[in-house]
Structures are given as structure tokens and as C-alpha cells.
Image 1 (spheres, rainbow, N blue to C red):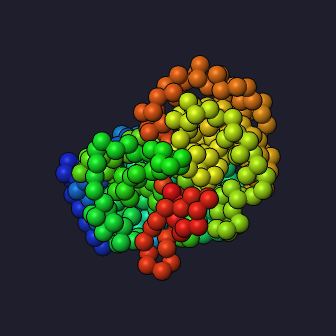
Image 2: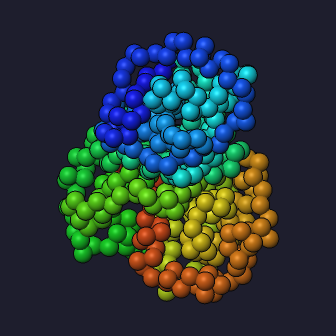
Image 3: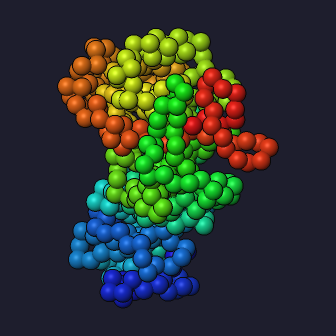
Length: 430
């Protein structure tokens, strides 16, 4: 059944839905209408303020006649799907100004193209006999908590990014119950998942003069607090966590907002998805701990001069980070600069992942395809990357690119998180 709103009132004031006005008898009024070609309609506007609490957003849809209606995206609990309800002026429907009911009620009454609203793909509107409903297919591995609030365009951006992951890998995530959790901020994500992290952040001094990553006793160390992380992966919970906003490193309350940052969101999803792939089998038996991967990593690492380390310092903390970044690059999810950096410095690792890991999930890509679609200098020396993207040599470039995530594992004894490198026996990978 469908909640109804007077379209003219809604468009003027985004008023709440008028409850319990079900459209009995409307099907009879439309029964005599001729069957017409299914129209394809465009979303022209996304409204997120002043709407009922049970809705994530209202989508304003232009019709092919003389009007428009609104599609309300409900906060639906069914994983992988999001039900939508058409909200319109009842008179428009009874007078045939929307679209005719099809001969087969299972067929769509209209097809919605959401690209104008930042939604990839299309979804169908069905005539239920008492109104219109639609299923907007959210990625099957996206977790939208009931309490969470966030910008709808941010939701679409994350969802679109997840849908770009190759199908075989998404299916593996789904079978493994590996999820991506999003929320408005660090309170709705990090601190909600683990309240002790708030205490840790409150007790960690902020030194704006201290670099976010630095070499201490021959090891690269990440100095950020949880509040400073744009995204993270929790192996023990099989969970990618990406808040819409986080705190800028070195500040008390400087906010970074990823709403409208589609490339950044995609980079983060593919990098964190790389961590998820690494740990699909088990935490202790992950791909980045395999003998072949270790050999490739050490070979690449030995060829990085001390004067070049700053360009890839984030990926020298542990083997999990280059695995995640390379996987994201080979799947075509990273920006050009990021793909060029990681594939030029870690070519042997990339070849190992390309030939020994990704084919297990039905994803195959040749070196020629990499050079054509991802990084033209693949297989050559890193001068090609530096020619294409000279800013790779700058520390600020690495901070923007590599500072997308932290890789964590919760201490099962007290829920706290501590640093782990691949050569130290602690309980958290960063």
C-alpha cells in the first residue's frame, strides 16, 4: 500500500506524507487505459531535508507528459534492497497524467534513470493496483544502520563505488558476510562500534607539528587517532567502515566531508575492499602472508632507495597495505595517480596478485589491458609514473592518496586497538 501526498503541496513546502490515504478504486479507473510503451523517466532533484523520518530521501521525477512525481526512498532493513514509494497528486493519476497500467502487472509502469541524481543504472516502477512501488537495488554488501544519518548523495556515491567491484569479488564478500558500514561521522561509526576508541582519542594529545606518518627506529609509523581516519577495515568483524566526515589530522575539530567526493570515495572503497579480499579466507592465513606474496614484496621493497621511501612510506608499514592498494588498482578502482604510484613501485607484488589471487574470483586482466585501461607504464621503470604524475614525489600527494584508511584488528580482551606490524606480535594492524 502507498502513502499519498498532494504533489503540489509537497513541491511547494516538502510537507510530510499524508498517512493512510490508500488509493482504492484507482485500478478500476485506469483499467480501460490503452497499453503504452514503458516510459523512461529522469530524476531531476534529490531532497533530504524536511521529509518524514522513515525516508532516506525524496527523488523528484520528471514525467514525459505535463507533470512530475516524487519517489521516496524508504530506510529499508532488507539487506541488498531499498524499497521506494511513489508520492504524487491523486488527481494526476486518475486523469492519466502519469503513465498507464501495463497489461502485465509484473511489468514496469516506468523505468527510472537516476544518473541526474548521481545514481548509477536504472530501476523500475511497478503499478501495485493501489499505487506505485519500486525496489532500488542497494549493493548487497552495504550496511545502512537504522540510527545513521548521512547525505543521500554520499550514500549513492558509496553504493555506486561498491557496484563497480567485480561481481565475483562482491559475491565472495556476500557469501562471507563482509559488509561496508557507513554513517554520518565518527560518532555513528567508529565510536559506535567501539566506545573505547573515543576514550583513546580523548586521551591522545594532538600535535599539529608532528607528521601523520614518520620513520621511527627504522619503521614507518602512522600517528593518526581514530578520529582522523577517513576509512578503516576490521578483519575480525569483516567490516569496512567509512564515515561521511572525520577530523582533519593535526586539528581539534577540523572537518573533512566526503560528500560529493566521488573519486575519493571510490578510491577508499577499492582500497578497503582490497583488505577485505586479503582476509576472505582467514585472519591468520591471509593472502598477504602467503610465501609467494612475501617474496614479491621483499623483492620490490629492496629496490626502493632511501631517497624514494617517502613516496610510498604508507605501503612500507606492513604487507597488508600494498596488497590492498594493488588489488584496488588492478580492479580499476583507483585514480590514475594512485594506480601509477603503487604499480610502478610494487610491480612484482602486482604480478603475484594479478596471476595468483584475483583469478580465484573470476577476475582476469592481462598486462596489456592494465597498460590500456589503468596505467600505461605498467612493467616499465618508475620514471614513467613520475613523468605522468610528478606530484608523486611530494609528501603532500601521498598524504592525500594513501591517507585513506587504517587497517585494524580489535583486541579480544578489552576491545582496544594497538599497533601491529607484520614483524611484531601485537593485535592490531595499522
